[in-house]
Image (cartoon, rainbow, N blue to C red; front, side, top):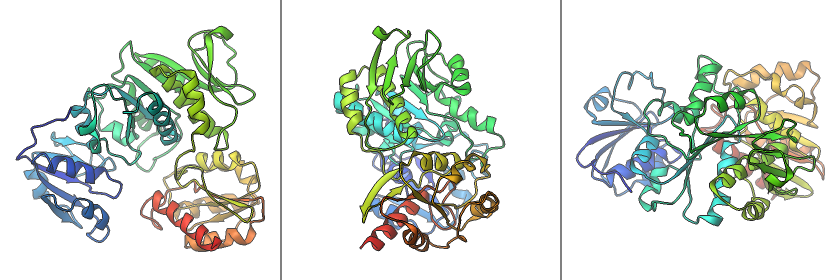
Amino acid sequence: MEQTGFKGLKILVMGLGLHGGGVETARYLARQGARVTCTDLRNEDDLESSIAALEGLDIRYVLGNHRIEDFDSADIIVKNPAVPSDSRWIAGRNNIETDISLFLKASTSPLLAVTGSKGKSTAVTALHYILKRQHPGTRLGGNITVSPLSFVHELKTDDPVILELSSWQLADLRGRKILHPRIAGITNLMHDHQNRYESFEDYEADKTVIIENLKSDDYSVFPDNVYGRKWSKKSHGTSFLIRNGTPERTGFRGAYLDERNRGWFISGSNSRSNRVQIVPESLKVPGEPFRMNLLFASTMARLWGCSSDIILDTASDFPGVPYRMEMFLNTEGIRYYDDTTATIPDAAAAAVNAMDCPVILIAGGADKKLDFAPFDKAAEVPKRIIMLKGSATDTWLPRLRSSGVDIDDPYDSMEAAVAAANRIADPGDAVLLSPGAASFGMFRHEFERGDAFKAACRSLAR
């Protein structure tokens, strides 16, 4: 089902962007007869690919700046999630939408929604991979850089839709009562985006918007920790917890990894007769974080009704997600991993600890006002750390050097950093990009950083 009623309306798309959300919003509205204007602070050269994707549609562009008259005259303003609600351009207005809110108003498909500080993209991609085996019409969108407006017109009534939602996307939905997932999950909660939030509690509050409309016959999935247990009490749905290690308490409801790294789902009792295996011992991507994300996805799939046989068979074949511990090159005995979306120190630490061989780490970048202490112990693991220049590196580097880590002066290009890593790497080693920081300054976004890393590695390999 698709919403109508936009014909003739003046709609301003604020933030055309480069990741598809603005493009799909503009396309969706223009095809329904809206009078669409796209405004973005980037210039035409920066947005060339996005503009080209909308060729042939009747769309007006205001680029390189915003104009107040465009906002004042708009019937609807559709903002990019990165635009804070207190932005001077939209603060106090009551005609604000997002691509997610437009989708939720247009679609009647059953919904599975996932958020979290880290791991959510891997979890939703794995969930999509599994559900498609049983429900071929399953679609995936949201923060994973696929706007759900790109497929809303193709959905059948019973096609499941999986949405990955960021804290910013959820903040835009607070109190609107339009997000109604059948299954909602939060993979974890770590310190992130503290350059955007006044407090960690505000960040957590945005994450929990995902469960604010759950009903008694819905499900919620959380980590088995202090946050997850708190959210379980807040959720109106039936809650399931995810843990690494066999549960000691009776009446545990959720899923866990045993001593052999196999995943088991328990629906409400610790008895062996009431559990089924949902994660195999052998997986295609190394490390505990990947295995826990797969356990999270498999739990949601089981709650959706997928059989354990389908879940096990599909999970064992899941290749992982580009830009997230992606092993994209193996040459001369050296493996190369792209983990560019590890934009917080905790994620970089997890990536380093997941490796089963000597590792040369490329890290650093732009600061998000985070504490680098979570990486302190992991700093002892790499054979060498190669840093990229940036504001986070300026803060992080003295801390690393004071702990005695073998480290170079920061490099001002990805090519130079990769060349330095290659000089050190021996057969049997891994070169890992897991920055622990944002990409801005040297790159437009983390995906461009990952692409630059891959290109530099492949160029040297040739």
